[in-house]
Length: 244
Image 1: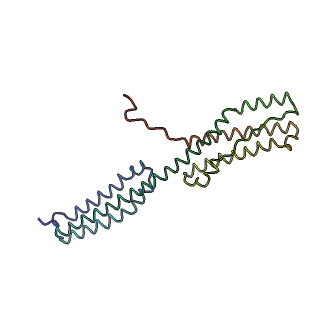
Image 2: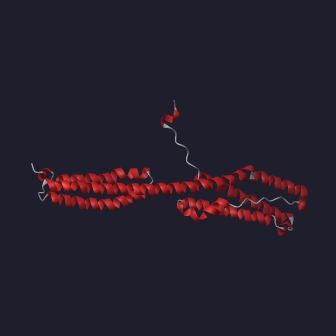
């Protein structure tokens, strides 16, 4: 039996259908697993037209009664095409892996710095600071001059600010919101320590102190949101849950 008669155009259509089914059914969960939906879309957009055109061309060639020599020349072409797909997938996988590593490095650095601020906020509860303020004002009156600490400058954030575009958009927003509020709080604390402010009556200064504690509480809440967002991934448990 002649090879061209054995391999009909129906088989070419079946092969084309299976290839399309692979793209539609198999690759999407793989893309979700690797968080590479854009890779899948690019692969789908490139490969689907190639499969359609290639399938139609193969079906037409098979209908021309080609001999075995011509059919054998198609095998290297298929290998070349498959090699191109494999190369494409590996290149995209490497690019995504590098992007993930850059994002993870940024997240770890920001998490470490925000954690230092959160530790300070946790060490001095706003409710306790308010109670202490009211007690000291009652005892000292106009002579009350609290020592206002100013949080240190966010060195890591300032160093990495030009790299924030590597993070997802919602994480950029969370980081910017926290550090903007932190800078506002630092400026507020500096104003509360100025000679001009300390010359004001205690009634006005008391309201400003309470406002500062409210801002501090707001920044502490933003810090907790950022810590949850930038938290390092938990180490994976070994197969079997580590049971011996």
